[in-house]
Length: 125
Image (cartoon, rainbow, N blue to C red; front, side, top):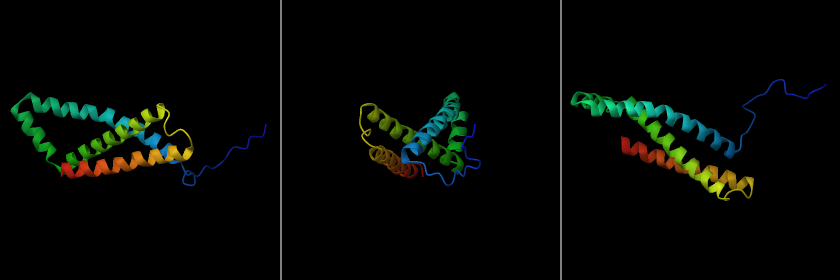
């Protein structure tokens, strides 16, 4: 039983196609959104609890770190949305003709996310 398995696998030598990167990022953005729901619900509950709670949340949201976190959440939301639309289009039979069309749709979703991320950053700051 002689298996030709790699002994040392250098992950920096492997080049993933854009479709694989898009799939991984879609899952990561989903996890980020799931975790961020707890933070956003806490902020909402605190701000609606009392005038003091609203002032506290207002002060928190004026900090640079909070704006960066919210920008990250908005970027994850934008990517998850674009990736979800891409998956829905693929379910309808689009972008399945060749690997090139799948790579192009993945690159388009990433490019649209970059644009939406920049817009979110401008809106926040």
